[in-house]
Image (cartoon, rainbow, N blue to C red; front, side, top):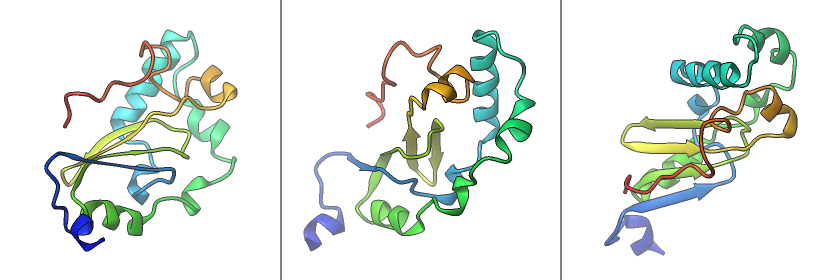
Length: 132
């Protein structure tokens, strides 16, 4: 166990979790807002002023997501790429040399409303090769 935790690996470390590994991944970054606007435009939907009005009163997922413990674990073993789910929002960010990727398809409603950006522009799964 300790050898694995020390990070004695001969290749890049990629980690996975179902849960969101950092609280700051919950909120949309400016680039996420741009991607959502592009997605909605491609789908013929109005600009993203909808976000606070339509989604502001729904369940506040940020109260129960984002695990600093999980982030410490993946950093301890030297992860350079962490893939996660559960959030229903796409993210692709690098924070302190670790890339965090959530490529969610979302619910049918979320797809129709264009809030899971990338669905209209990516031709299939998001490709991550070449990162490691």
